[in-house]
Length: 411
Image (tube, rainbow, N blue to C red):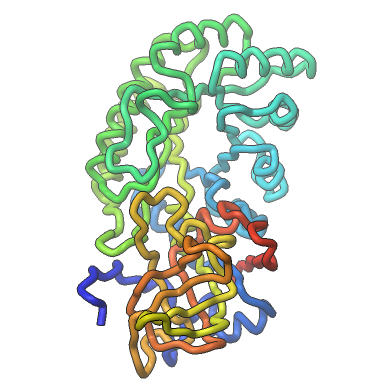
C-alpha cells in the first residue's frame, strides 16, 4: 500500500514494544500523560550521548567536537551536551546566554553570524568568548568595544571560501555570501587585526550543511585545510583555532542513507598529521549541529479528527507547521518530501492505509505527511515525526494563527 514510493531509511534508534514507540525508557503513551499535553517535542538523553560517543570512536582523538546551539537551544539539552562536547558555537546573544548558563567555559565558546549588534559584541568581549569576524566593519567595532572595556578581544576570522560543499542541503560558502570574509580580502583584514593588536585565534571555514555524501565532505575538507595552511603564513599570530565546519547530514527522506563516517575520519587523520607539523598550536574543531541532536528527537501531535475528502483520508492534528516548519516542507525544501512519520501508539497496527497528516491551520501548507502508508489511526492516536531533534520548534513560526504553544522535554 505504499503506492510505489521509495521507503525511508530504517529508523531503529527508538525501541518498539507492544506496537508502541518507547523513548527515554517509557512508552510514548506514558510520556504523553507525563507531559500533560500535546503537541510536544521529546529528546532522548541516551541517543545524544551515544551519538557523541560514536564520533569519539570514529574520529581521530585530536579532533574537538563543538555543538552548534542553533540546531536546538533547549537549555536542558544544552546542559546535557556540556558534559559531552568540547565547546559550543553560538549565533546570537540569546544563544550565548544559554551556552554560558549551560556551564560551558567561555574560552570554549565561539560566536559567529553576520550582523552582530554592538551590544552582542560587547557582551561576548566581556565574557571572553571568541568572536568570528564576518566583515571589516565588525572588526573595527570589536576593536573599539575592546578599548572601551580595557580588554583584548579574542577573534577568529570566518572565511567565505571560493569553494562550496557540493550536494549540501544548504550552501554556506562559495560565491557571493553574507557569511564571512571573501578569501581575496583576507590579507588586508589579517594585517588590520595585527595593527589593532587583537587576540587572534585562527579561522572558521564553513562551506555547507546537511550532506550525506562522504566524498563531497572529504573534498570540501581538503580545500579547507589547503586554504588554512596557505593563509597561516600571513597571520598576525600563530593559528590556535581551526574550525573546519561540519556539514554532516542525517537521513530525512525516502532514498536517504546515513553518512559513512569511516572515509571522512581517515581523511581527517591524514590532514591532522600535516596540521600538527605546520600549525603545532592549532586545535582542529568540527562544528556539528543536526548530526549530534537531529535523530535524538521526535515531535508528537494528537489526532483531533479523521475525515475522507474525495477518497483521500486526512488525519487532522493539533500540531503542524507552526511547531515543525521543516516537516511541513517549508524550511529549505524545493520539492516537498515526507519526513519519516508513524502512528506512535500503533507502529504497525492491525490495519494499514494511505493517509495525509495535516495540522489545524487555515493554510494548505500545513502538512506533516502527504499520502503516506500508516497504521489506520483514529481520534486520540499520537502522530510521531522522527528526525525532529534539530531545527524544530525554534525554527518554526510558533505565533502563527495564535494556537497554543508546544512543550519540549528531555527524557
